[in-house]
Length: 450
Image 1 (tube, rainbow, N blue to C red):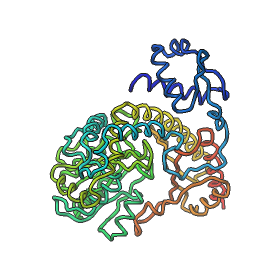
Image 2: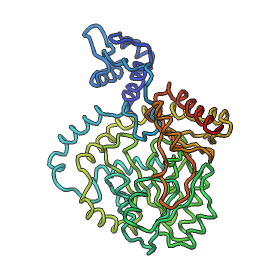
Image 3: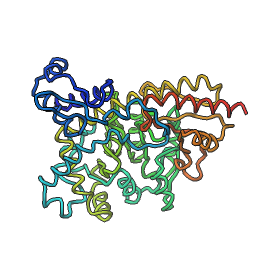
Image 4: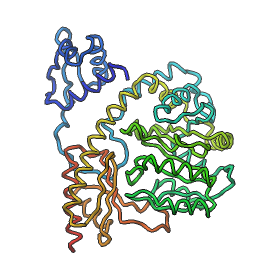
């Protein structure tokens, strides 16, 4: 990441977290240069970018000042604690950066944006994505990379297209991604589930299903599973790759939260695939904003032509303007700046959520169980006592302006459900997390005593 972009993040945090009042002057350029150990020109470039974002304003021959209103929401306590919303925090959406990239894309590509593209995607975007994927230990050729209109489109195409193994059924983790479950059940496609929980997955059961059932592919979220929040170990990922090769079952690896990984050794299943049986999917919706319907699919050669054909028939191409803007966003270094900012914010909230839940579980008298994580994430889950009604608890908490969501839609219709609550802190302020979890724990303890 460029030094001035890194500096922008630090100065933005300084403005938001320090007790600066509206209209208060920032330290001088010389002071900031000495404090951050960089040139005055780098400081000026970073400050000028913050001026464009209306966080500060410049007074000639005087200095830079905090814009009125910047800190008006700081320190306030939210009236609604929304532990149900999985959308990214709107406070960190890169609105201005991406607006610049859209304008730049129109200027740069002009006529190319207003004609049909290709089902495969924009060549310049695929080029930069291929380099980015290397950082996730996904080494592939450009011919294997497809731009899709979100991971959801890739899943819908994979579900209907024929596979070289000639098999028909889809195997999915339970609980799992609700929109894919809805897609499969609405179209009455052959699908079966396998339980995933705190401990992971029963590999003996998985191998039995691979051996005895007609499994076309196994759809899995190895990293920061939705809705559970847990991840597979490196050993488990390697085992999944071996089983896929042994039984000619494809793995569809949904790595939609790859950008939030803190462990540099946590490679995807794709990195362990020696038999071209892993399809790798990546999304930009959770790291940038949901309205950017751009995802990436890495498709093995035996499947590539069928995937291209089915995608062309589905939507001809994904939005050329979105692709061009994303390409500029990735190439310019703006993505790296945004990634550092959102990673830092989410990591802080994840640690607070993990600590609050561990404390609450210890005090709940068995009302709920929680497994503390070595690598906590922004969303996770708790296992409730079987006697507690999750819908009733959710209704009670709603009256107290604490929002939670049932997991009913995360299960196949006929799959046995666990008594689970999902908690997501992407839209809960850091200072409110412990308070919210304490109240949830108190209500759970009361429910267990009845």
